[in-house]
Image 1 (tube, helix red, strand yellow):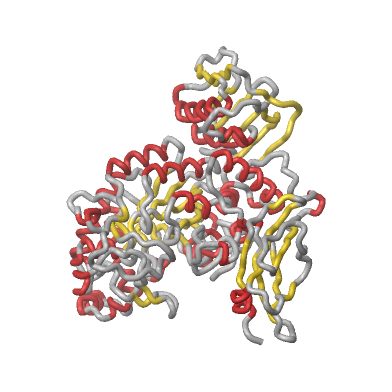
Image 2 (image 1 turned 45 degrees about the horizontal axis):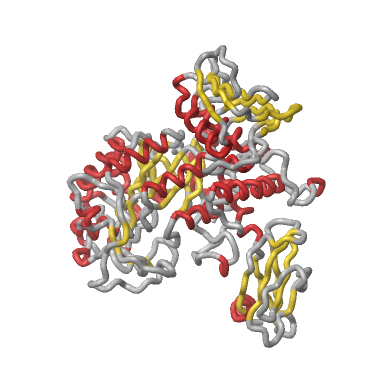
Length: 634
């Protein structure tokens, strides 16, 4: 994998302990913030001065202010009315601010937010709310709070135009309410793009008129509980009742909900691989006659990754590039998707397509001979170019994962660079529009703590690694890097609470990487802000991962073959206490200062982190068997 070019800023020893809250905890960090004297106190009757075109922003702000504070919030468009908060669109555009920038001026008597466009006002409101006490996040009235904000002057605008999160609703179905909840959390951090992964081996989640089996068959599988990918193969009598899909009206509702919060939704239809739900619905889309017996995947193993990429498919989950029926099918799908989604791009997948069934197909061999294709990469390239033409014929731009670059795909194709930043760098020099989303930094489904504390997946991305993310890495042509995003795949994520847990706080780090100037990023400052936002999410009842407080266990062997344990934390200022006697340690137990030796007959180790005299991490138990395994042989 390629490595990112940003390094973490060194911790500033003069900054004091991390437990000291920063004076301003705005995420993402603004371009410029200047503190002035005094505070603004929210009056009992709040007057927002705005014009009718600002209605979406005003309605959002009114709800956010009135519910937790109990204050009466009124809106006027009479410029002579005495205002508490004034929203203003610049009569002459401020070139520095662009379409999404804003300025905030807070004096003891008035809050003014200015922008060129209403989107900028909306992002100004997000920063304003983060200046209020954390209780502003409450969904119910909170009494006895001094609703004040410090007087400041803020100028802010985004580094990149595309600031996204990808939400996989195919592996497990998430309801409209879930998706709206995810959008509500996103917009606090100035994200403006929700990438919905709508189809995969486990489910087809969007109604396509004229192709009813996509949702009658393709949207449902057998409910399994445990570790996805290792489930037993469902029997013929197990009910296929787990799943769901969005009607076209549901999609319109979600698009409108997002638009009202200045978020675009990009649909993804993942082809030619990851297509088992489509093939199970319409077996004639496959190159493989046995597809007539295929069922939508419920989490059983269908790929062998032991030899790397591309995987060896245990059954054929691909659409057949040699089958004309596939292209008429995709034309129907893309026609309806293009009509539903206003966003300029349609993402058509293109990743991880296995080749072993294609290699055995007489139809593929005939296609290769007819078109002069030398190998399976060129077979997929033929497919991608035909799909790109279909997408562009509907007035949309075509986007795919970086594997679509394996052939000479036209430069009009957008590239989402996931395998490493290097593919995005190469794409930028080929004049593709590029979204940077390297798995090494921003794959939010990967473990964020020690493997014993997280749903097990194939790799780990801890918060510092996410914060290193530079969406415009050295060597890229910045003109073609249009954005970056974090990706949440949901194989091991069964509900919206776990989706939130895996997204935050790494989602804070991605937001700061795509919005804030590179030189404004500072790890020590970010951690202090993160801790303040944990308190806000507690009040908002949004789940997040406290993994940053938990140590990583490293085991090795001493010269006399005893197991030694090293405990590593990502942030400073934490104390670790431990036990080997099966009891639960607190701060009166042994304190970790250096590698410790596992006692001969111990069966488990427990640790907990403290800051001062308060526990801050989780009680973690690791077996000595696991430590032995990690230590290996010597």
